[in-house]
Image (cartoon, rainbow, N blue to C red; front, side):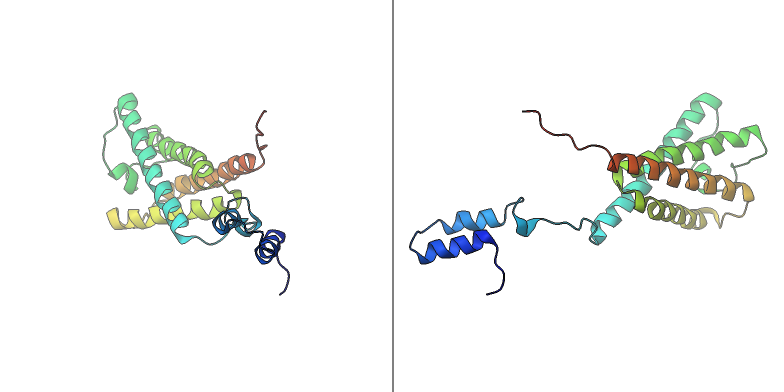
Length: 186
């Protein structure tokens, strides 16, 4: 045989010497999380279910946060509560104070989205991918709901929000990745 792991070689020599050994415990030891066989050094394997669930949860939380912020705006500024605020270009206006209420809501949801990136995605190199995916799904949803976004105000605010989400998300994820691993105090 070629190269064998030491514990497998020891188990074979014990079995041939009549030393016995419980085969089920040896097998359990080989499949334990700390055995060399199950150690996975490549944590970036392609897992489509994980990626899809991260996209769905990020998109859902984005709309939930945006809805909560619009509810707060209703209480503070007496704005109307309508789904058009999320999916149409009608309420976003860079040149009026009334428009900046919704502009601030979109930008605030992007900042909270950066925190969600750090919690859900956890990898700084994936923040750009997930942010652009969220933005593209939002464009598709807006197009289905109320037509393709055709105002510059909508594009400026959402582009600023996406850029802030990417930059802050990468910062928070890299800070989380570089944090010390706590050791047990014995």
